Image 1 (cartoon, helix red, strand yellow):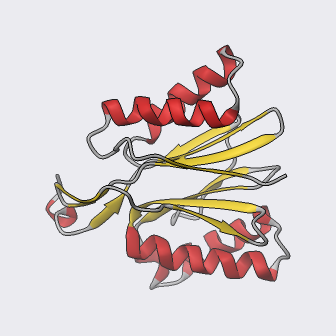
Image 2 (cartoon, rainbow, N blue to C red):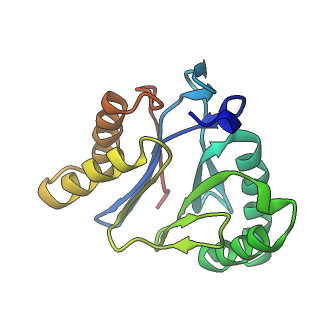
Length: 184
């Protein structure tokens, strides 16, 4: 572990899955301070803009919460247009001297898009209907991609099973999983 990371509170592993016109977001509940687990049942997902957008975070918790509040404001300004709000947040995040120092990733989804938003100005819409962030993100994403492609499972079950797999591999991901569904 990097010396700079030893005192930072981190939240990890958020997964978004779309299948058959339905979107879900799942997150584990673990929060760490350095190498110590501080919380087992944290909430890392929020509903935004008239409950039409799901947003999750990984990274430094206070930084992520600041960014989520800013994204919520952008969504209000752009009448729920997630893509436009995400691009505007990323521009602010990259160019503002204070925001630039924030260490978090945001995963956002609506009925049409899954987006990963970073402080380097990235707004990435994956090719697959699956995306994940955080320490266990690669494990959860790989499992979810396989399940989407090779099973008849619904997206909620895919997200749950993928998160369980991530929790069994990543020490920074636990099995206290919360799943939010996009409302129809």
